[in-house]
Image (cartoon, rainbow, N blue to C red; front, top):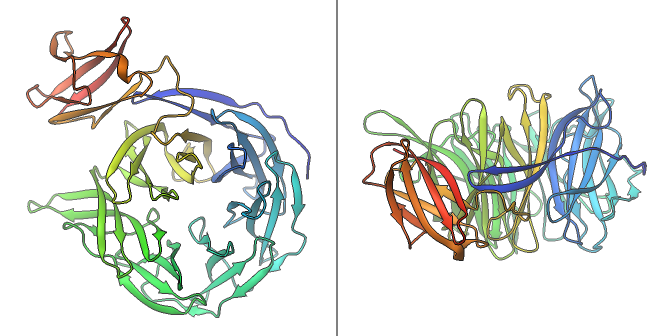
Length: 485
């Protein structure tokens, strides 16, 4: 169990959309017969490092265990360990024990001989395994807990898990961090509008109220409310917002932000007067009376979407929202929006571009930053064909923690743009910028400005491609292609 494995990892430095990102690309670990399965788990260790977990398949597509990787503040892998505790399956968050700074816990549901069990593995910040759960806790009738959004840690630091059996009933389980079963709810008959993809969250701690974001057969979303013993108290349909309505699916999520208030993320659509389908990605904030108090909307193309894991909230209420922008071919860029408590945009970063990429894990950091992990598929329709996975770490200003000085130190958005092009310049060089200029494809200067570098008015330019040059004191010049719509 404590056997250490030394791995060779490809550490890749990318400059995507003007921002250098540092992440580890991990391909085919352990042996030629093991395949990367999924990367959902990411936490911050007590020493400020980031720990991520990666699940592996064997050649018969059975789960065989999990690698744990430790990354330093520059997203460089410093240590790794392999754990092989039965079959790792279904819900398996990695948690920090709030009562012990040097104790991290893998919790896992796994299936064995047709029965389902709950187990845990403890390890310290040096990835040394300190305890393995010997008691297998059987969960009768639970056949599928539907993945990574159906668990939470409540205000008592207990693990709450939702599952459903084959008789159209759902149940809730409460486990202590010590692995013991603390409570199992009575079976609750599912609503006839219920479909599998849902998100469990805490609405309030006093009194304790849980919410379950679900969607109906006609794709409308609603929040079902439960008390502390998981008795159903009612439900609230997500309303239309500015003419947009929800259409459910795998990529919606909900999270509580303070007592009684919560956020819902959703794919939205509406039909314009001329019959064109318009798409949007949206965060909706509700108060304790289930009234909409704020929204953040990204109006974008049909091929864009919110990521699988798409929202995280810091202790001071800052909101991180992750969505996927379609690029050429099968590539997708992962975009991170940072919002204040009223869902006003503070900054936006494009952080990774990968074939069929998606974000599956998010963790806010003690310094106010964010760490995300995810994976890219060789074939997005074959989940066993995972190509690699990545980790990106931001500081609270949205810049990667190990900025590559040779990368373009600014971000242009939106791109393409119609009227105004915003220019977000790295704080490291912001006071060194002397001029920003635009050139057409023939090399002719069409616009230049020596101040007010935060935005450029391009409304008077003809549609087409241009090159923006940012000149620094001392003669260094950075270039970025932009498109005028």
